[in-house]
Length: 212
Image 1 (cartoon, rainbow, N blue to C red):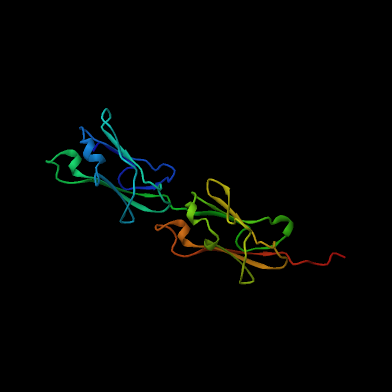
Image 2 (tube, one colour):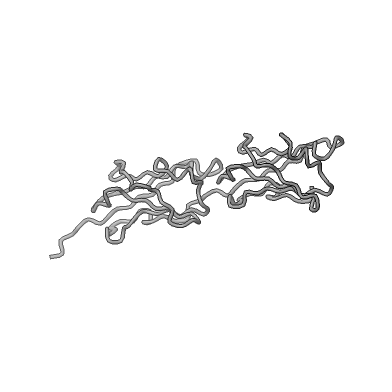
């Protein structure tokens, strides 16, 4: 092997770049590369489907990608069968890498904020370092509480506010004055390599006061 993409033991790999490649110093058996078992990809130790591998004889490079793409905060192992290198090859070609874990960069309102005016509160937001997986963007993973009681979210929440990893949510019946709120996000949104405990923060809306 001359080079690998992602590199062996690479961490923080972007899920937006799901194509894997391996460049060899000599030609491969293309038929065996494309055959069942010629290339395998394991996610957290379990084999997952991949598209048909491609081979470029000029660059002696093999490329392939998982059918459903890469998932955030996840460990992978790619394996190319030794058979592609001929009967004298004694071991499979294998390498490991992991994708970037979505880490919380900021929340809004700030954790612990008090006296928040409803005029300034459209929705609660959370910004992650990288996007979470689409199938994790469900209401069951994003919970809102008012005075420790669960609150129904707006239809369609949580919503993507920025494709880089910003999400928003709000109560279906609007924010209430003089109330304590808490947002709790399941640790599963950060992937198997991510958080072990739920992500949460609290804030309070302003209590109305007499002006005159």
